[in-house]
Image (cartoon, rainbow, N blue to C red; front, side):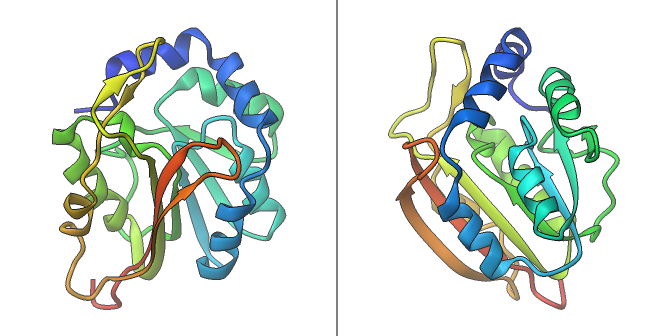
Amino acid sequence: MTTDSRTLAAYADAAADYARDWDEQPAPLDMYALLTTHFKPGPTADIGCGSGRDMAWLAAHGFQVYGFDASPELLAHARQHHPDLSFAVAALPALEGMADASFQNVLCETVVMHLSQEQLIPAVKRLLAILRPGGTLYLSWRVAAVTERDKAGRLYAAIDKQVVLDQLAAGDEVVFDRFEISASSGKPVQRMVVYKGLGA
């Protein structure tokens, strides 16, 4: 299983356009405020890093950050514009090549809605698995009433929040859980911050 093939094809066909659009949007100050509050010093993964915009912010604020994306074309743009940062190809839900308990913080901003319903459960489990005990997961997704594709073919799945919550272990703690309008994209998003249990 991997990220939806039609979504990947859409990003491959117009990677520079998508990256430029993200880079030119207003800064996601609402998300950055959450990261400032909840992320702790330590190795940090940006899963679905796209253009590298949020990685650059994390690096500028002292985080040891690593970017991963399923799209080689988007990563080419990111490497060109952020040559001092570290990028690699990796796709949800497997995130192959990443060891469990590798990261203190994991950022996954508006990515999982590009997965099928069958891929969502293993993706959330994998995001939690690569976190160290006591680490922090920031997870968000675009909210949609029904599963559909945009004109380019990108998948936007309607995600049941309870399905995400059901993947948490007994010691995990949800410290932020809110539906908001993104200050950057202007789109409706569900945002969640989870502290992984120390015994996980």
